[in-house]
Length: 113
Picture: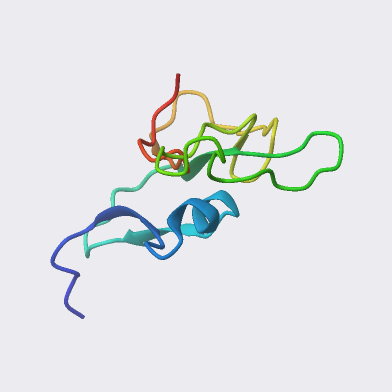
């Protein structure tokens, strides 16, 4: 079987109503492995997100600020890794581990402050 021509870790998301779709979590990871995969003890993908959530009701807040409809969305007030607010990610000591770290902020720049 032939391997994929461009192996790697890819992040994908919608470009239709992007602020709301990303804000609700419509995004994902695509991993393309080739024929020669390194033998790692752990191959862990960590997907970092921020969410605009009303902490009292648990519902989503507005994804685009109403005061400036052209401005990009704001950073969320709740952060998560792989969907968990306080995840525990275990790695074996003294072993080769691959970590695929993806920062997927719906604020548009994918960064943190």
